[in-house]
Image 1 (tube, helix red, strand yellow):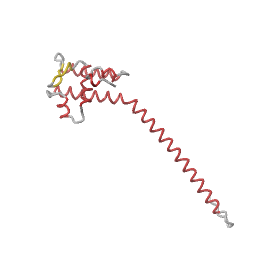
Image 2: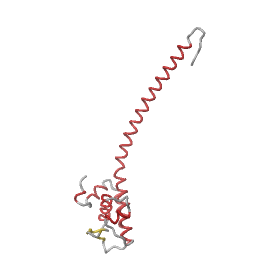
Image 3: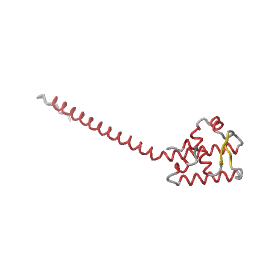
Length: 157
């Protein structure tokens, strides 16, 4: 709202409008900073809440890869899996093995790789893995349940 009067009041209104705009910008910047801070905190909380879901999803993925490699007749030791799938490191492999052990598909391991339950058919092994994954997905403490099947050195939280 700029009104120019011939008596010189136009400069006053222009300066006043500029000050109002500057104060509104400062207020909006403050609101933006508050909203960004709240958003960051909410995203952090959401990430913490979804962490077990992501970890369980990773366990299921790795267990599936290991069982696929076994059914294809390939080696299933950590190094062999890591050589074939670079995104699967030691810890991810251990979590995948924990799921296979929980399902009763893997009974142990030695220097040559995993020892699979010889009494299971391929179809039965896949059924057991699927049932275990579904059971864990419905559980609130899935990661704690799987933790018992990890090597002793990896069981700490």
